[in-house]
Image (cartoon, rainbow, N blue to C red; front, side, top):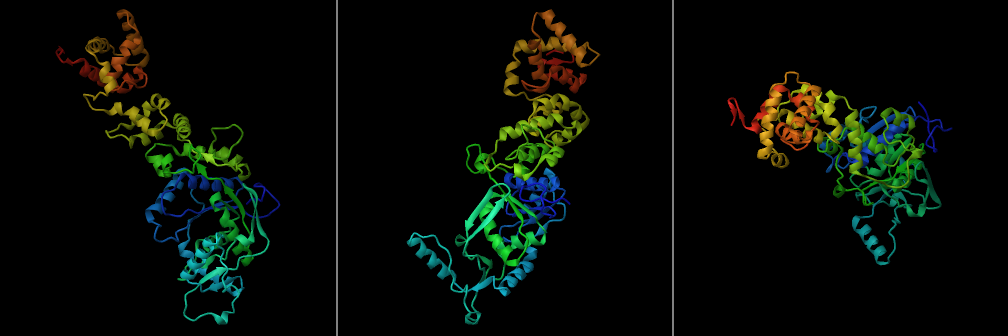
Length: 481
C-alpha cells in the first residue's frame, strides 16, 4: 500500500493511505457529500490505499433508515461504495466513552459540574460586555475530592491555552489558530453519551484513517480534534479541507439553486452515473484543459494537491451537456433498458434498442430520450401535440393521402429507398422535401420534431407507418373518407 504525506503525493512519511467518507444519515446524499466521497475514493485509489465508509448516526432523533439506504444507494450508483462494510458510529459509543475515561485518568480531561443555567448566565454576561464567550470552568483544576456527590456532570477536554495550533492543510495550506480561542469542549454529555467531536477522533484513529478529506466547513473542528489526538498521543492524520460548492450566483448551494439528492439527479433528471462522476470530479479539480475524463484517467491523474482553494459553482446546464456526451457514448441496450422504465406504454426492448442510434444524438438526459422514444409505442390514433396539429391543415392532409398512396406501392422498406421515393415525389409535385416531411412527421409521431423522417418510417415499420398516415389522411379501407 502506498503512502502519502503533506504534499498530497508520495512522501517520506511511511504510512498506509486510508481515507473515509462519513455522512450523517439525516437526509439524502447531496451533491457536496457525493463530491467529498468521490475525492476520498480517488485519493485512495490513486495511492493504492483503502477507502472506508462511516455512518455518523449519533443523532438518533434525525438519523433514519431510509436516509442510510439512500446514501448507500447513491454511493453505489456513483461507483464509490466503500472497500469494507460501513462502520456505524452509534454502535461504537462504549469505545468512545472508554477513551473519555482514559483522558480523565491521564489528567487531560475533567468533570465539569456547571449547570446549563450557570453557563447561560455566563454567556449573557459576555454578550452584555460585548465579549466573545470562552468557558473558564472552575472545575478544570479543582481537587476531585471537592466534587459534589450525585450531581450531573459533563466531561470536558483540557484544551491547550498557550501558543497556537497549526495545520498544514493539503488544500488550504498553513492554517493557525491561537489556542486561547479553543475552549474546553464537551467529550461526554451528562447522560454519558459521547459528542460528535470525540466520536469522530476515536473512529478515525481506530479505522486507521491517514487522510481526512472533507468540506472546509469542518476546518475549525480540526483544531479541536487535534487537542484530543495529542492528549491521547495518537498519530495525527493529514487534513485536506475542500471548498464548498456554491450556486451559479456565488451563494452557498441550496435547494433554491436546484440542489437535489444524488438519487433525484438520477431518477428525476435522468443523469447517468458516469456523467455525474465526471462533473463532480471537475468541481474544484482539474487536469489541464481536459473536460471528458474517464474513471481510469481520474484514478491515474487525481491528487488532492490539485484541488483549488476557491469555491466551485454548480451549473446544471454544464452537467446536462456533459450527460448528453455520455448518452451518445453509451451502449444502446443499456440506454434502452434505462429508458424503458420511463415510458408508460408497453415497450418492445429490441425496437427501443434499434432506435437508440437515431434518438440519443438529440437528447441530453434520459427524460428527453424517453420523450423522443414515446412515439414508437404510442397507440393509434395518435394524440397530436399543438404544433403537430397546426401542421395538419386540410391541404396537408390531402398531401398525406398522396404520400400514403405512394408509400403503399413501396415494398423495399429501407431508409435509402424511402428517401429516394419521396424525393422523387417532391420533385414531381414541385415541392421541397420539407413540405412532405412536415405533415408526414406529425402523422407518424404526433409531434413537430423527431429523428430523421426516414429513420422514423423504418423504425415503425411498413404496416404501422401506413396505418398512422391513413389515420391522419382520413383514409378508410374503401378509400378517402
